[in-house]
Amino acid sequence: MTFRDSSYADFVNHPRYGRCPRFTGLNPVENLSRGIYFGWHCRAEERISDTAIVAHADRQPSPTVPVTHYFDLKRKCRECGRNFIFFAEEQRHWYETLQFYLGADCVRCIDCRVAERETKRLRAHYEAFLQQPILSDHDALELADTAMLLIERGAFGDRCVERVRSLLNAIPAESQVRRFATFRDVDARSKARLRRSG
Ligand SMILES: [Zn+2]
Image (cartoon, rainbow, N blue to C red; front, side):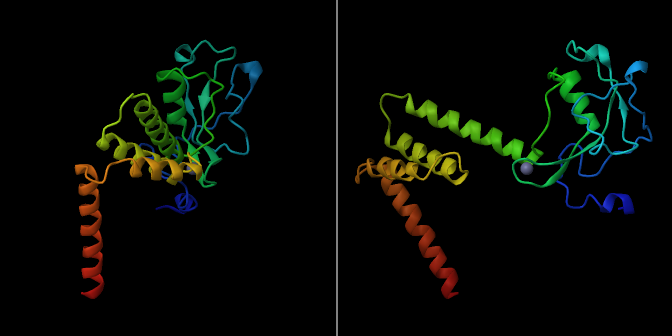
């Protein structure tokens, strides 16, 4: 790790781009009259020098003013407060490959974005279950489990704990699902006890 890289040690690691800036040696100066434009969210104080890459204006989704370069940008995640880089390569991917609107900004780190997608997936899963007219015992157990995960993620309030309880209580005592859950629970407890005594 070089001296320059060590200042990024606490930055969120992006699985595709890493945590450190990618130096290209390109450092243009913005000049609208010469048609050099970086876009409104490329703020000077966040820009990392010598990381610019050339943009392809013809691939951007019909902008009013095309962006000519992307820079690695230092950001603080709005969700978790950690530092991360909105990479120049990532911007090119967003605006030219995925065709995101040029005004779309990245305000959360990759970890928080992935967690948000997972929460959305769980919520969709939960809501699909609620549409079912009849829930099997197994469905009720899975619904309770999904609700519990959403509570742990802060997506559902504490009031939902009651709902989880009532879902679990609705499973008849003689149900295979309940017996299985009970056995699993007992098994886990006994293993914990063995570890403690061992
Ligand atoms: Zn974050």
